[in-house]
Image (cartoon, rainbow, N blue to C red; front, side, top):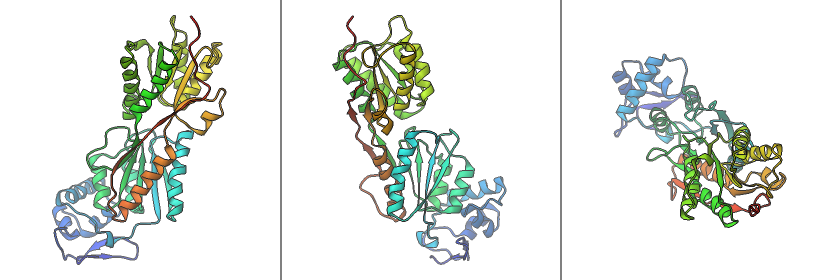
Length: 354
């Protein structure tokens, strides 16, 4: 603990007015913001009994004056925060399993949150994290805005983005997978089987992983000198219903595709349902490739050919990175991409004879 700060029994940090090195004291921040030192302490510790305008003024001074909480001033709780933008699929369960593996090994408990579909959590979530002071934060398909990043950084709370929806800002630790190569491998597999009319049901265009998988699909077709037909491209949302709806559209085209690359396994299952309703057999009439390799991919009929995204390993890597950063350890890399691999099962075959 530095001169100028004292930690109370509640775990909150208050300022005695004595500064050291280049870090401003709470008294200095309070003077700059025109508030009391206890008010600054409340903001630092995520207390909710501060007016929004006052909080914003204090946060601005914390940022401008470069406040950084010293690790010794407040021990983190035995918690690991895990936040999803959506929490309603088998995909999320695989991520939870990976984070739980690390939490169990480190004797940590997990705080699970959902941001109601938003790719950036709200301020209420941030306030909760500041109050809990977890050992680390893992954000799944989410990111923080600049102000939120500063809030966590200034309090010494490490965070890692897992499978980022966009391109994380410089310096933001992130763990992802090689989505472009996965899209390339899936489409090449279908080309090698002899398919030429290959459709894709991708994910949301605003997500980096969706764009990368689509780019891999395009690259495979262009390399094989097959024109990319925009009528065979559909945007989904990574849910079963999107695969079903896009499947009905694609499979009722006058010149329907003989194969479809689904942006994830759940959309592939939607395609299965659409094909069944239209009387098409998989793989005799239609080949389908998914992405993720969820456990259910092995048990559907027929078992799904898919691109394996090692979700458990990715989640373990992100959780371990967050914990290590919280302990002051400098990892070999803070941007990690884990390789994908194609898993061939029974949902793909040569196209039907003309």
